[in-house]
Length: 396
Image (cartoon, rainbow, N blue to C red):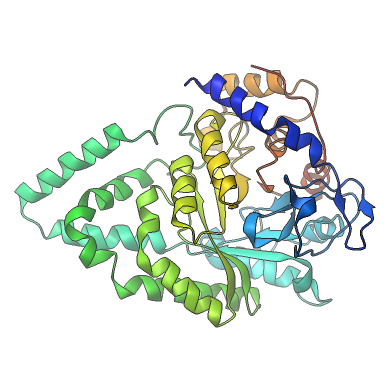
C-alpha cells in the first residue's frame, strides 16, 4: 500500500470522529465550548481533570482517563535557569509536563520542581518522567557477553545483525528521520542486543540490574522534582526496537512501584521505529501510554499502528512533530526543503512552519496531544494558541 493511500484511508476512517468531538460536557452536564476531545470522550465517565481553563482544549489520554491539554510541555528546553515562562503556560491551561533524567543530567527535573513549588501547583498538572538508563544498560549487558565470545561466534552474531538491519524497515527514508545528533548511532547497540537474544536473553533480560535501574531512576526523579509520585513512567526512554519492551522486569517493577504509590501508569517513548514500538506496546496490554515520533513526513508508516493502538485504548502523545520540518540543532540544518513544501501544501497559509506541524497532528482525533518545546513566552503563546483549532487538510 502506498503512503498516500494509507493516509487517505486513515483520514476517511477518522473524518466523522473529528467532527463529532468538538465539545465535551462539563461535570455539571453543561457544555464547555472550545474544549475538543478524542472520539467518544464525551460519553466516558470517570475522567480526571486538572487545571481546566477556558481557551484550552483537552483530550482523553486513552485508558488512563487523564484529560490532558492538547499541547504539553517537552523537557528539552527546560532548565533551572529557563522555566519561569511556564507559569504563563499553566495560566493558559497546559496541564502536562514531560521530563527525563537525561535532559541536562537531571537539571530539567530540578527546573520543573522549582516551577511547582508552592500554591499547590503539583495538583494542577500531570507529570511524566522516563527511565533514561534502561536501553543503555541492556546494550551494555549484551555487549559484555559479546566481548567474551570467540571470534567465530562474534562473526556469526554480526552476520545476524546485518540480517536484522536489512529486514527491518526502521531505517527506511521517510520513516526514519534524524531529530537529534547521534540518533542513528543508537541502532547499532539495539541490533546487536536483538541478534544475541535467542542465545543469551536468559543471561540478560532476567537480570536484577534492570529492576534496580528502574527503581533508582524513579527515586532520583522523585527527589529532583520534589514530588511523591509521577502520573506516567516511560520505560524504556527512546526504545529503538520493539524487542526492548519484552523485558519482564519492566512491568513487574512498575507494579511494585505503583503499589508504593510512586507511579500511576506505564508508558514508553520511541524515536526510531515508532510504529513497531507502538504496536508492541498495544499488544502487550500493560502499556497505558506511548509517546512516539509522529509527523507529516513519517505518517504513512505510523497511521495504521495508531489505529490499532487506539482500538486497545492506548493513550498517544506525538513528539518530534515540529522537528521534522524545523530544528534548533545546527548540525541538522537546513531541513530538507521538500518536507517544508509538503507541509505547506497540506496546510496553506502564512503560519510558521513548526506551528503548522503541530496543527497537522492535532487534526488526528486518536492523538491526545503534541509534545512541544516551549523555549520562552513567545513559544508558549504561539503553540498553545493552536489548541482546539480545526483545519481542512489538503491532499498532497
